[in-house]
Image (tube, rainbow, N blue to C red; front, side, top):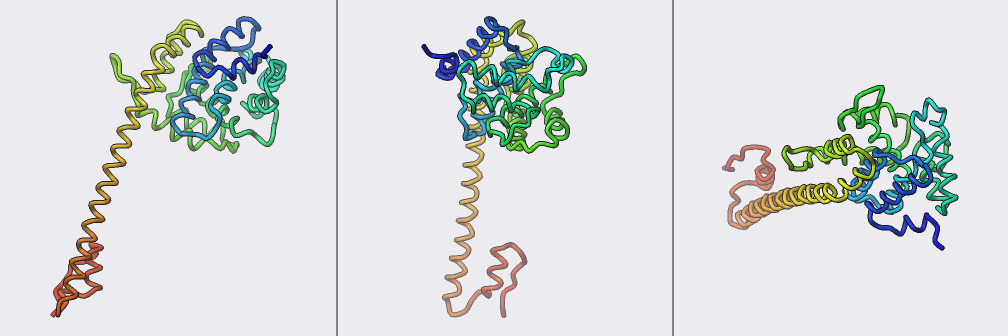
Length: 282
């Protein structure tokens, strides 16, 4: 009989993975809320959009489960420094490999696990960022660009997270990709709105997977097409400019082969480089 780890890792649909984790939380009492669904969606988009060379299936599964032993008000309950390690130990009992559990344990740095797995840095940066863009009792949510500043200058200031720079690029690009409905809304803002609007985890998963996953994918694909057309257009412009330079060089070479040069090689080079006005030689 297969264990839970095999069961969820073999499920390739992200929406189904989310539902499996939801039902596990109902059965066992592990921590699973709407924020984890949002984090997992952002992690998946990050890996896909930036073409990161990791096992996406493994990372999103770890993102769903790494906070399994977290509690509400973890800092007040004295669990802030221990829940990740306790979660890793629990996940090992469900059949997950030691490396998978280590990745989950490294969602934060309290256990001082070293060397860190590269997948852990993805989970860490997404976990921290998503926490910043959601409302908390003690503060209002940061907008995505503000959250990036806080992420770099406070939350991850003294870390060596290898994906922080790339994640900043990803979020800034995503701010220019919009979902078109009654009003046009950037992708991250729409995801946060859905998180806040939906009544519970199950309806958030349903709305996200049934409606918005495809809309987001379509918006990103359209943006990639626009970027591709712009790159191709720039390349064609570059080729045209290069062709004009070659024509000038050919003209200069032809003129030089005549009995008398129209202008010297040095002057020709300056003209081609647009660095001076030429003067005919006497």
